Image 1 (tube, rainbow, N blue to C red):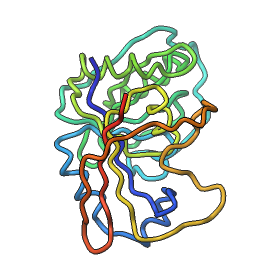
Image 2: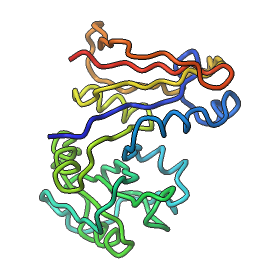
Image 3: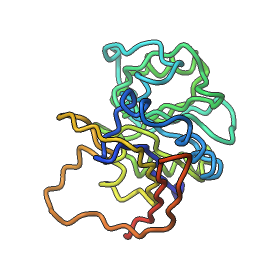
Image 4: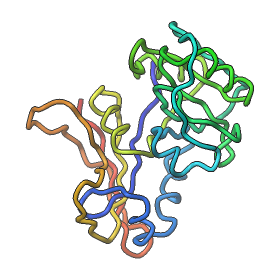
Length: 226
């Protein structure tokens, strides 16, 4: 069992997702649509969390000490929804246990030290350690569903996290807000990025709904064809 997973992102016409750029193109349409996806826990990658979450104090080098070396989890308290961050090596330092009113839950690999996990416990933050060298996304989602009661999960950034979940075959739906502008700068991250396969065969989608939101934003919802 795993949660139902929706990638929910806002992009320029050319598929770029730089937050500073998108701030010039839209107001609150993204968040209005996010609330309409039904109650979802929200998952971000490390870089997105470090840039956007007030709860993050800093990024720091990996904390020294013996790695946990086994699958484990720590649950602070039950919650309806969580603010989840994927932080493979445990480099984020925290100044709060909540983000935007949702309790934080960190997913890390088994290479993370016991000392780092102790800092999460002391901060009142739930965590899951799973995967020897890299996070085992399949198993992490099983634990989220079985132990934390997460039934619906919205992936809200960034491009490499979206790409990793897609490549692992874990995405059920893609929800895209297309903002009225073009970025065009080289080297900018796209909605789905960092996929390692070399096949030219795309991932196929089936259009569910199209909606105009606000003045000029278009909201597209697709089901992944598996």
